[in-house]
Length: 277
Image (cartoon, rainbow, N blue to C red; front, side):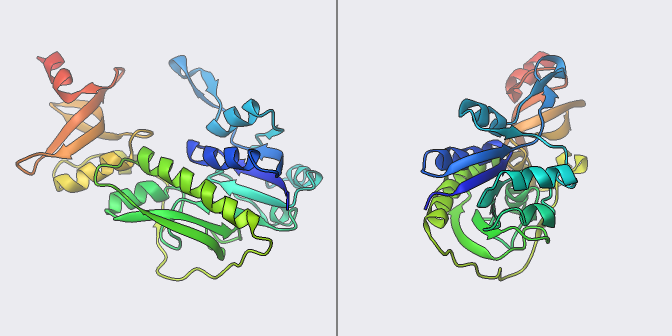
């Protein structure tokens, strides 16, 4: 049955799901995303989110509220007369009044096997922890963070060399496929989450700093977890750099492969060291 859908999402991970919904018989009556952030040349030009880019490409009604905790936001949500909200890494809390605006509630697509890694950085924390697999969970949005009952989930392995970008790409494809199945079910069954709960805290500045006294394998996991979107920070040859790729060397040492000096471009570590000489 075709549904009237409000889509809420922000990063590249959310794009495949929006594209999948648009390609079906459902009607996307509104797209919510985060407002553009400063970026571009010299960090002055506003950069739209990947979901804003896609919404404009499909000529969908677009909303970028700073918060959903106002009477105006609640009125706008009700005015869409939507059946359901689909939420994919949106970045804003949905208060109870917003959730009540949708008769079928809100389905959240989360990039982990809940209840493991509830929170803001599930892929990054999974890689840092050395998890062998992760996945996507579709659950009902409730007041408690990522705690709602589950309608569908699918696991996939994390490759030994996968960075966060690769894992998020796979998760995006899985999420779109899972949602297609859930929306086709006239009465999807939701079951409570089971298992130990862990939290994927937002990446902090201290999480980016590489302590070179730590084991090389641990440092490489941090680099992979923060690439290609955040970047790990280290001091090499007495110079601060961002490390984008690294490996464990033949002697078991931490070996940076791609770095970026301050106010410079990304380059191989060999090219960077030649520049120092």
